[in-house]
Picture 1 (tube, rainbow, N blue to C red):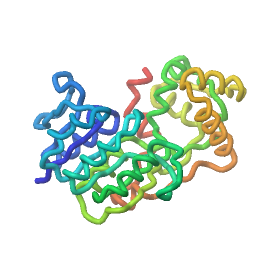
Picture 2: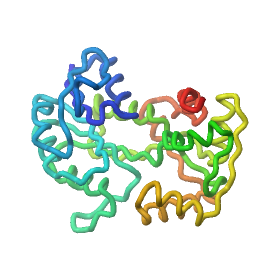
Picture 3: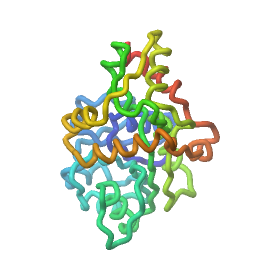
Picture 4: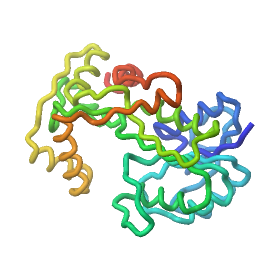
Length: 277
């Protein structure tokens, strides 16, 4: 039996990582802000800690074999990576689809910065690079419940991945050998358009749902107001436009690693049907 620390243990991916590790019989520790309020499976040890305060991690890290690391978008704390490298033999980092950087090349995202810190830390590592999450469709919730989804580029085809597939891959690479230094790009098994994704959710919940394209400038203003990062919004919109003619790439990484196909978007919608009723 090995001991693993899971950060983001109550999040959409981390909770599945915790559950699968417990089911496999491992000793699981969960890093949470408030152990008394964390809903965790029986047998999981909750440790109070916060990645923004590295000193709080040390008790949770003592004696661990591996760490599942999810960074929540806060400023990068190099001390966290140093502590993980001091205690763990292997870290699996939930990154995103980013390019590798040279040591002297400026990072354009915190994921690149953390990846580089991990690479230089001396700990064995594996990077998971999901292209995009199916859970982002939850942001359409109110519109889906009212049968019309309005957004830009309805014909943009996306390779959305189920969060449980990310978790299953994370557990696999944490608990089996041969993944040190691997960078795994993860996608769903197909590219599905925004409009078809909305229609599929409607079919699953028994409601006709249609997509209505928004003008790009209207979409940009709304997304910028919601997200607050104009450069990120512009990059997203350019990507969506490109996916109209060239669908987002699809990889077979999930199937190669797990020996079964990645879950489809329809399966994701079925798993989340209650969120749209």
